[in-house]
Image (cartoon, one colour):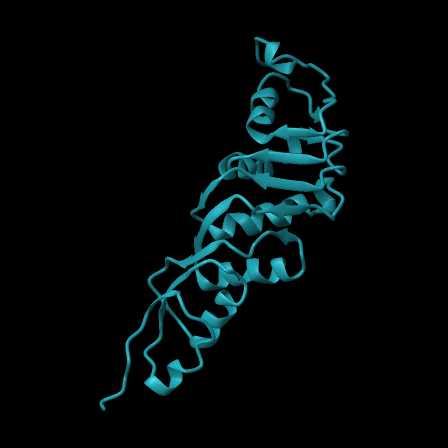
Length: 193
């Protein structure tokens, strides 16, 4: 119904009756009123990752957000793992008016890229079930830096998807500690024989 509002800049008091809303549509609605939009009935946010990140940035323009339980992105890659962490932390922050119990659902994400530290932070959240459906995502360390065998095992152990990363220079015997097969590791051996 709110799409029928044709102008912007007015002081409309708006409470949404929807339980599931698209973050892109929320951004459009936010531009039509100078008053915070009431999300008291909303339990699920959907949208592209960029739309969900934008909602996190503009969350102060919305009130009564404590019913939001899940943020689910539509299909596609995530180019910045750090932004996933920021979104996660934002929608779980009670100081921002959220319940503290919301989860980020990554079931539709294809590949998540970032540094090892950024990706491992998501692994930790997935282990705590505050990020759901993390397993099955492809993980790519796109920094150009190298990671240890233990780091590689941390990432590969968290997903059934493919891990792409450059490993530190190792010996052939060191490589035996790699736990899984089928990943896209760039490996340089330091053995001479």
